Image (cartoon, rainbow, N blue to C red; front, top):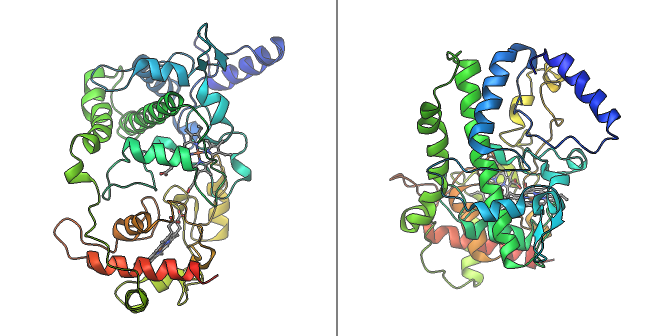
Length: 368
Ligand code: HEC
Ligand code: HEC
């Protein structure tokens, strides 16, 4: 049916009342973050929606576009309504365990999201924080597996340690699916709305320039770990000398750690205007501008706090290798920069120096 958006919304509300709230199958919500919906024509909206549905199906019936290496059976177990099949296998895992926070579309704006600090991850940007991979690379399956089993300490993201292995695999597959879909969607919106591309869209073009590069970025890290995994040198002993050296490096002007984490690692540095990349555009120059921007976003602006190391709670894991990764490549999606060498440039810390800084940080937590 073709009708204007407002009429359509009215129809949906009416239909919801008529059917007692339950029947309309859930659909993916278009990613309009930061955009005024009135600036998108109905024709553009429908072109994007139709193309995405053709390629990725719906939350109840996901499909995998040609050339994308995802497992349909795993996806089907994670998608759809909560149920168990004839063999007692659980279905609808994403709705059962994740939707309250991450939302049907993986937008990080589920019904509980607004109450949480930090907000749940929006998978559609393809940016993940707690990875073992170099800057700009996707997490490995093992990274997502670790996140799911361990949860993210100090945040609402719970541990799913008790789920059977095959359910974890299904959920990882589904996170990748939502993320590839989300990146394709952003590409489509740029094409159709920002570049005003002629409709109807050429689907091969969408595949080659948007979808396949997003899908390949996930495959690449698995196929070439030598290139994409962070490779630390052997860890020196965490003795008093290493901690002392780590303290000096931490406090050095080049390293900049003090700026955000403060002189004693209490998270009280002078830099306090810190935001996740997806919160930054919500901030105008004046409070009035910030208020004006608010209606373009689903969730209100939220500041990001630099970690207080004395608490000893580390979101990406507290083992030395976890912390090495954080300091080496920085935290993707946040202003915390990489300290280690990258792409032929030296970095502010050598790989061995990073270990000393890690020992210093861990000593602050152990001091408690
Ligand atoms: C109670 C709320 C809640 C539930 C339920 C929840 N999450 Fe999360 N999740 C979060 C929050 C909050 C974060 C952000 C943590 C951060 O920024 O460090 C997050 C982050 C993540 C990340 C990103 C990790 C990274 O490296 O950036 C993944 C992946 C994830 N969740 C997957 C899932 C999956 C899959 C499920 C269901 C099995 C799930 N979550 C259930 C709240 C939740
Ligand atoms: C521009 C500000 C900034 C600078 C500079 C900075 N950090 Fe951070 N750091 C942050 C923020 C913000 C977080 C929290 C990020 C999050 O949870 O999403 C953080 C988190 C951390 C964490 C915790 C990781 C975890 O798993 O919870 C460690 C460790 C850390 N920083 C070490 C350092 C070191 C060492 C330096 C200097 C080489 C440094 N940071 C420089 C802002 C900064």
